[in-house]
Image: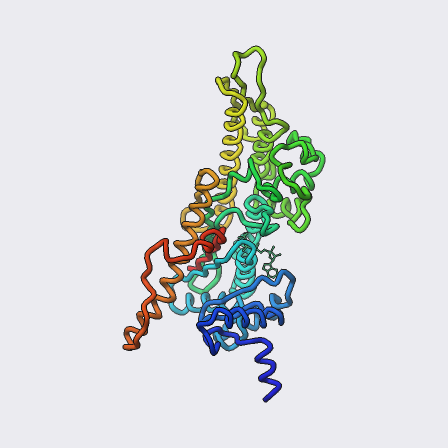
Length: 429
Ligand SMILES: Nc1ncnc2c1ncn2[C@@H]1O[C@H](COP(=O)(O)OP(=O)(O)OP(=O)(O)O)[C@@H](O)[C@H]1O
């Protein structure tokens, strides 16, 4: 008995609602710390799961673990992401309604990893046929592609998603995954032309230059040395891809999804031609003072975009021409990303139409929109948990201090608005 109590004390409580002093922040953090020290990274708050990033590989995501959680009642086993995934899936199958899993947290908290683990769980545990395996594989493979083009090293996370992702997985009446589709929003296009000190541009550029074979780079008119490219050398640290999936893996994935290899990377090259040296802008002595020519070298652009060749003579000074060059680079990248998401959606053989949107906005406004979107999702979560509880109390005649509804967006402390960078949503239907 004593041994059991010590063990319980050592790992705290599995569900925060069981904490004696459940309103104390210190007790909450203490419980989280105790469990984290024992590599217990998951704790429930009722049906919500709190996760702490372990920053190390834990032996809790094996197929055996997946089988263990499959079809088991929520609270019968220790808290786990698989329990959440399984519960959403089973309720969807039994009640024939849609479910979503909302994953939110600050940058580097582990949202992307969590969404990948949920997808892996469904890939392993859901019934499937040989034909449906293609959809399943493509769903899993879409991640490395999106990460290559949509993730970058930031000060908080070496593999930070610089876009919001809303993914849905469609199941048939037997519960087999038959399709999916991804909505990406607010790709951080400003990153292609400017990165903060210590941060990097999107992974794809470094991957391509580091791993692409000589013939490919030659065909694309690119040089291996990233120092040649203005947009890639604003970082202070290493330009290599350590810790990030390398080019070879990505190339294999692109073929599986499948992409036409030349088309898949052509737009990247189109963007890089904007980034060469001082960019495509230079002053022409024979032009009147203050004039600059913004020029895209015909062979590069023709081969990259197939049809786009432009030569603009305009009375711009060098600064304005650089500004225009950056705008073109951002537009190309934004469109590339949209195209990529559309392509992935097409390959997922979904029955509903493809939805994909990437907004074009200056950097601060971009961040504002991301925060606004996150706060809206957070509000939805509060609505669906606290409000539902309050209504139940009311029905049962239990007195309660009302904390909902609260006016949006002022109900949340400001630090929260600043810290959250994106939210992952997985919808099951
Ligand atoms: N469950 C986990 N097990 C082991 N390592 C993890 C886990 N979750 C996250 N990590 C580590 O933390 C890093 C950051 O996690 P992740 O990229 O998922 O954060 P994020 O919340 O999606 O961040 P961002 O908002 O910046 O995209 C991962 O690259 C991985 O190294």
